[in-house]
Amino acid sequence: MRVDAHHHLWRLDRGDYGWLTPDLAALHRDFGPPDIAPLLAAAGVEATVLVQAAPTPEETRHLLDVAACWPTCRGVVGWCDLAAPGASAALEDLSKEPLLKGIRPMVQD
Image (cartoon, rainbow, N blue to C red; front, side, top):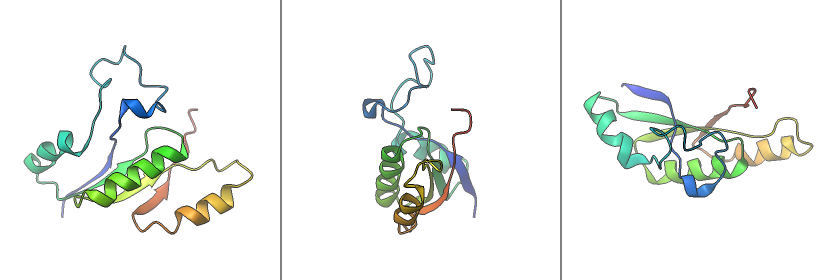
């Protein structure tokens, strides 16, 4: 099985992509499953993993919601503030999500 193990989807109206500014014209628009599905099919990719593009818990929840409705998506790599006082509880809560496969810290931020 061919898997795209790292790609991003986003909705600008969510407002948590501070890095995604209009000067990034090619990227400054919504990207969802309908945008990537034909590319995956053309490349023979049968499964995909969504990776967070914003360091917010809302982004992780959004991606889990997308993944739950999109059979091609087999997993999500989300975000959690690992330095926050409630990190253990947040990770425990996220660990209950069957589609969550990992956490990616945003070290550049």
